Amino acid sequence: MTSASAPTASPALHRQPHFTVLLALMVALAPLSMDAFLPAIPAMAAEFGVDHSRLGLTITFFLAGYAFGQLSGGPLSDSLGRRPIALGGIVLFLIASLGCAMTHSLEWLMVFRVLQGIATGMTGGVSRTVVRDVATGKDAARLMTNVMMVLMAAPLVAPSLGALILALSTWQMVFIGLAVYGVIAGVAIRQWLPETLPASERSPLSLRGALTSYRTVLTTRGVPGHLMLLLCGPGIMFTFLTNASYLYQGVLGLNSGEFALAFGANVGAMLIGNRLNHFGLKHLRTRKLVQVALCMQGIGITWLISLVITDNVQVATLIPGILFVLGAGGMITPNVMADYQSLFARGHGAANAISGTVLYLGGGLYGALASLWLSGDDMLAVPLVMLGAWAIGGFGFWVTRHTAPSEQSSD
Image (cartoon, rainbow, N blue to C red; front, side, top):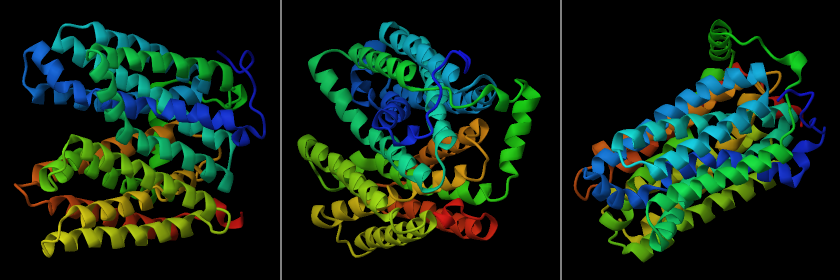
């Protein structure tokens, strides 16, 4: 659909509540698709007659598809417009989700999971790109705060939703539920997403042009520092998410009900961080907020390490420390993303494709590193990997301050 036949963007679109809801629906596709099926893995493994670890590979296949969807969908949205890519991603998502529900073959399940990843990469990438299309400065930071809150909270909520569906029905209904969610998101995109990239500002569609766009992004002053910073919040969150069961059930000995409550409390912590960020944007520049949040995270991670060293790991000490660290993370990623987008004149599909790939693949690698490093009851690997992510983010912040001016400095 071209911009001539699509609704046109309102100058105040970023202030309309339904637009924020739309972006939330779009950005939640990926984390819901990746994690909602996790409680169903034992049942799926039994039906397919394979080991649980084989089903875990579907996450790897999904992330590979997600990266491809981001990296291909970004340049496509710069050439064809935002709406066609977002809607095309939804159509592919529906096909893939229904395929996952109906397949009786592990090999076909892997194929459909790759397609799911591609679809969510395309649609989710557009959700971040249009933020820069319609808003700048602190307006973009406020809108991105809501978007990133959903992106970071959805992986924490998704397994609980999957477990609820599994308790009422079969594992196939988890994927049917995802398809229903896709229909809702598709209707919202069709009704509420205007074409935010005018035809006059689109780039020609070619492989050479796409590669040139990526080279331009990666060589833009300030981009390397921002990408290192973008790894901080998601890297720490994925480190916890990947090892949450080990920490809460293995180390602390929580039962399934207690685990669900402790796990859900992290969403509350991130929501508090989200609200504090909204309040802070009224008084501080985005980079100052990032600096404050990085200091908070550093204190929290140091606390977690001290618990292990002093053999003081217990419910009353570990859980509050994790809540503090994740809550501070809710103040970092949205501001960094808004500042990163300000490096480009408009919403840049290729730029957002790179940042989205870094968010998911980089965060996933941190979590995997901690899992491989863990040994017995010694949980030191988790806060140490968090410390590594934080240190890289801190270095990225230093690089950013010295290489890229902040667009929000005058807001």
